[in-house]
Length: 294
Image (cartoon, rainbow, N blue to C red):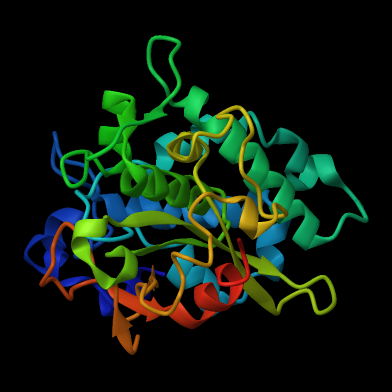
């Protein structure tokens, strides 16, 4: 895992390769020093595989690219993985190997159920002063890494998407951020970010597809009931942004990747000329899916 992360390291992280933990030699650290966040990320990626049975059906290449990475875009690098893993562990006790036993529930259903549970409980779990994390417009790039979102208690769509992606990854569910840098190809019309989750096929166990949903606090942007947590079985047309008039061929949509071999990059509305985040063009999928929605 460490070798994979180092081989595909994003350009922003090259100057900090040592402090991130890529050059750890396994020797005890001097007093006052600790491992970098990469060590923690790898450790909890392995812990997730130990605890949660759905990880058995995730192909290794998918797990490495969409679970193991410590970052999603160019957001500040923080040690959020252990915080999210431990915060969610109590909510997921019933899904651990020891608890689930010989359950006949499919891996696909497990993943969908857990995604809905996390999107329901995460925001209150990580909120402060008994207040859940909420949506607040125009916060990127000021507040969009998980620890900043937790500290402030709010973020706009990008920060919420990165937060949910990071939470899902912390429990071994492959996830990535998707979105458009400009509705209708016009930056003045705004942008939007949401989340894609890799869900294995019931039939084959390992083959899967990318499905999408909104972080629950972001639903308020569409004036919907914020208590109605979004989930992967929801009709795509029920999401406020998934409409034919938005996906008429002029809106380009992308998803984040980590692998340097990606044939595209992820355009960031907050960093117009930055091509440092590998990406995948998802325009065809969303034009086809949302183009049917009134």
